[in-house]
Structure formats: C-alpha cells, structure tokens
Image 1 (tube, rainbow, N blue to C red):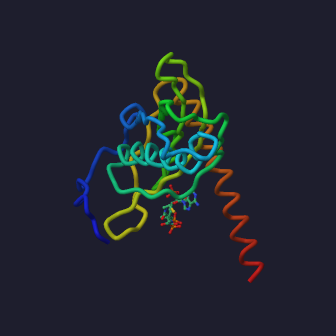
Image 2: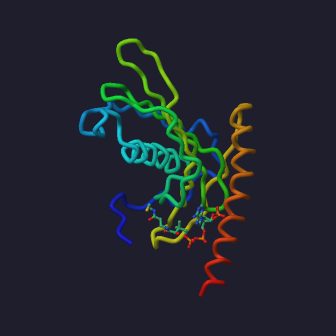
Length: 176
Ligand SMILES: CC(C)(COP(=O)(O)OP(=O)(O)OC[C@H]1O[C@@H](n2cnc3c(N)ncnc32)[C@H](O)[C@@H]1OP(=O)(O)O)[C@@H](O)C(=O)NCCC(=O)NCCS
C-alpha cells in the first residue's frame, strides 16, 4: 500500500496516557460551509469531527488509521455562519487494533465568547500496517476520574457494538 508519510517507527511505547493524544481544533464557520438557513451543514460538522478524532487516534498509536464506525452522533443546536467551531477529541478506549475517540463540538460566539455544546459523537478507528491490515495499538491509560469514567463507558459501548455487528452478520447470512 502507498505510504505517503513514510514508515512508522518500528516500535513505540506499549501504553500512553489519554492526555498525550488529545486534540483541540478551531474552525471559523464561513458561508461556504452553510445551508440555505445560514447554518453549518451537518456533513461539514461530521467531516471536522472525523478529522479531529482521526488526529487523536493517530497521535495515540502513531500509525495510519481509518474510520470504522460512528456512533451516537448528535446535532443538538445549529451553528451559525460567523461562529467559531471548537472541537475536542480524546481517545476513550483502545483495544487490540481499534480505538474509540469521543468528540465534542462547541460553537463560540467570537464577540462575546459565549459557548454552546452543539454536537458529540463516538468514532472508532482501526490502525493499519503498511499492508493495510489491522495492527496493534498501545494501551490507553485513563488517569483522571473523568478519563476513567469515559473508559468504562466506552468499554460497554464496544461490547454493544460487537453484539450488534454479530447480529447483523447473522442476519446477512440468513438472508443469503
Ligand atoms: C475497519 C477495517 C479496517 C476492519 O477490517 P477487518 O478486516 O474487518 O478487521 P478485523 O475484523 O480484524 O477487526 C479489526 C478491528 O476493527 C474493529 N472493527 C471492525 N469493524 C468495525 C466496525 N464496523 N465498527 C467498529 N469497530 C470495527 C474490530 O472490532 C477490531 O478491533 P480490535 O482489534 O480492537 O478488537 C475494514 O473494515 C475497513 O478497511 N473498512 C473501511 C474503512 C474506511 O475506508 N474508512 C473510511 C471512511 S468511509
């Protein structure tokens, strides 16, 4: 597989604390991002969330990653053109080759500084080796109370995702 970034370091640390890979990203909402109501398109917000979360996942494993799934994506409030979209991504959980990353989007009024939570989602990324195959990632070390809570919740979501995928696979097989 083409590797425009070159090769990853042959071996990295076996674990990393959550804080080491967190990403904060700010983006000014421009007319080009908007729908006919002057609010940012949902697809644009999703793209930014994917980018922000992917950077956190790559920082955690220092490997190329792909998005495997997106869960619990919510649009709580619209974001108007002119607002600053502020995204925060944090690796909640890492298993063998996959990582769950939580992303929260806030819209900040640039003149008043007032902020509002507008979107959240959980994205799962899988690290790939140079042949494009899933490859192991370091353990994630939740340190603070909030990181430990997110870790425990992400572990439950992973179990639910695996069960849902197994059910879907069985249904597909039965339909063939
Ligand atoms: C994600 C992908 C690499 C998984 O490949 P695969 O051959 O199914 O790999 P495996 O069955 O060995 O699973 C590898 C890991 O991915 C996880 N995984 C696979 N499909 C998943 C899904 N739909 N949601 C969440 N995790 C998933 C598995 O749980 C496993 O995690 P673990 O190693 O931490 O336990 C593969 O499906 C793929 O390349 N998908 C396309 C990704 C892409 O193009 N994304 C861009 C956005 S469209």
